[in-house]
Length: 255
Length: 326
Image (cartoon, rainbow over all chains, first blue to last red; front, side):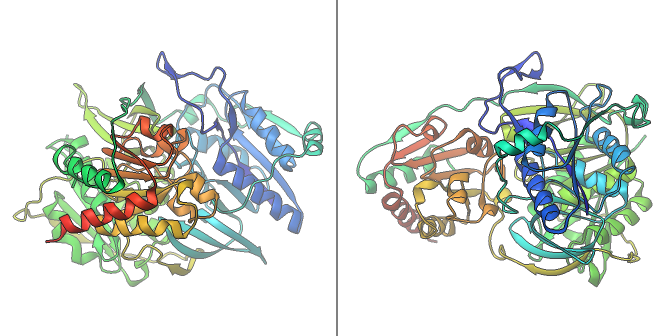
C-alpha cells in the first residue's frame, strides 16, 4: 500500500500573532505539524504497519518546513519530499497544482491530509488535489477502515455522522477524533536522519511560474480590535444571576 | 458589462439555511446593483424553495431536483452543480462556509482552475469596483484582506457575519429546472446519523453556552444544555473538556475545532487558553463564569461572574425562563 500524506507546518496554536510590515512575524515562534495533518500522518503509519507498504510525507513550503517533515519521519513515515520554490504563491490553486505535479508521477493508493490548516484555515488544497487527480475523496473523517481495495469511513458533517464507502485510490482529510497521534521516540528520531529526503523545485516538476500563477492576492493584514475586560458582577449567586440578566437586557441588549 | 454571480443555497432539516440568505446578500454586496444574482438549490425537493430564495434577493433561481440528491454526495452534488455552471457560465460562485460548501467549492475551483477565497466575514468594493474580502486567519487572531486576480472566482461565506437582505415578498425571479444526469457514483453514502436533528448548528447559533474543564464530567454539561434550551442556543466546549472526554470533539470551539461568532457566548468553567479564545473572541457579547478570578477568560469577557457554575448556571436558567415566558 502506497500512502502519501500532505503535511503543512504551522504555528503552534498557543502562539500569539504579531504583525509587522504587513506580514506575520515568525521570529521565535514554535512551529509544529499542522494538528490535523498529524492525525493524517498517524493514520498512514497505522495502515502501513497493518498491511505493509510505504508512507511518503510531502509538503509545499519554505526551508523551515523540513523540520515538520523530519518529525513525521521520526513518527514513522518512510520518505519525505519538500517542494520548495519561491515562485509558488500563497494561493491554494498554486499549491494544489504543485502537489498534483509531484503526486501524479508517484504510485499511490491512499492520500491523507488534514481537514484544514490552523493558520490559513481555507481547507481547499486536499479537495482540489483529489479533483485534479480525478480520484474520489471523503473529507473530515473520524474513522477509516481499509479492506479489499475499498475504504469505509465515518465522516463528521457539522455534527452529523455519515458512513461512506469508496474505492481506492482515494483521498481523505482527517478530523479530530480519528486517532491519537504518537510522539516520536528517540529511536525514531535517530532513524529519521537516515531516511530518504528529497527537495524539489518547480523545474524538477516541469512547471514554470506561469503554470502556478496565483489566482488570489493579499491586500493587507490587520489585527482584530482588542477586547477589553468588562464588569465583574459580585454578590450572592442569586444576585449575580439577576444582575447579569438585567445587564444583558438593558445594557448589552442581547436578550 | 453585466455580470452573473451564482449562489449555491442549501437546506438543513427541511428548511433553507440562514447562511444561504446571507450568501445571496454577500453576492449582491460584491457585485453591486448591476450584477445578476442567481441562486441554485440542489436536492430532492429543491423546487419548493424557489419563492423564498426570490424574496431574499435572487434574480434567477435554478433547481436541480432528483431523489438521489436528498443527501450530500461529493460526486453527485459536483455533477449537479457542474450542469448548472455550464448553463449559467457565472463570473463568480458563492457558497456558505458549511460542511457542504467546504467540500463542494474546492472541487469546482479545481475543475475550473479558479481562485477561491474561503470563510469570508466582510466584503467591500474599492474605487475601481474590485471586491475585497476579509477573512479571519489563525482562527481569528489576524484578519486578512484578499482580492482575486482574475474572473471567474469562488468565495465561501462564514455564517452569522453578513446580514441578509430585507425580505421582499413582492420580488419575482425567473426560474429554471436543470436536469440531473447521474454520474457513475464511486462514493456511496451508507448511513447518516443525524446527531444534530432539532439542534442548532454551532456555526449558525446566535447563543452559545460552552463548557470547559470546570464542568468536570459529561453530566456536568446538563445544566449548560438546560440553559441553551431556554435561550434557543447551542452547546459548545473547550479543548480541555473534549480532551478530558466530557463531550464529543464535534463541540470543540477554538483554533482546532470550530470558530464561532454568536451574539451571546457564555463560557462556563472555561479558563480561556489562547487557542480557545481565538475561536470565540469575535462573539458580540461574552460572559465568563469561572471559580478562578485569575482565569484569562475574564480579560476578554464583557461580563464576568466569579463563582461556581453549578450554582450560577441553574439560577440563570430560572431567571431567563421566567423572563422569557410569553
